Length: 169
Image (cartoon, rainbow, N blue to C red; front, side, top):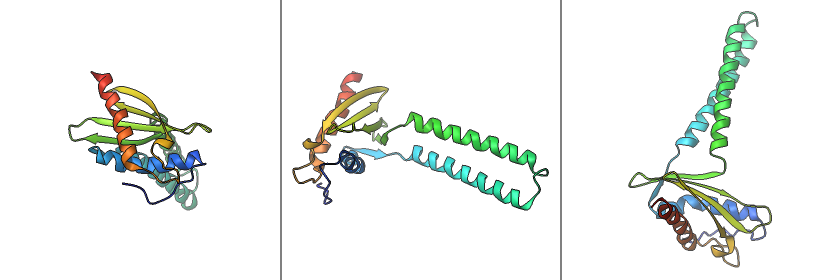
């Protein structure tokens, strides 16, 4: 499962981006199905705020302000509440790159992060209310030229996920 796209080995952000893009494929091989519930919720909330802003703009153009004052106040409050909910969701799921469920119904949440000059893929895996932090060097699953080695990354990520299971026992 080697990725055909070459990655710049001198850019930590490029290495992280390539790894994050392949995370879904790797976890699919491990038997997880990706859940898009949080993404759909965020898109729905964002779309709702855009619709509210658009309707307020049209109402302001068509009617006098004193006639639509109560609607404007209500819409502004709803807009603020929707944005507050969106902010809280983004705060809770910061750096989350993958949310998936296996055939047994076990949910796994994977968040990734990199430090500026540290060539390690820092991963936080949450499953069964247990959190495991791990750090995987990029040179373990990228070859010398810059190609992603999916099989090796699958092995490394499955070891990290199994650590969560061992912590639970």
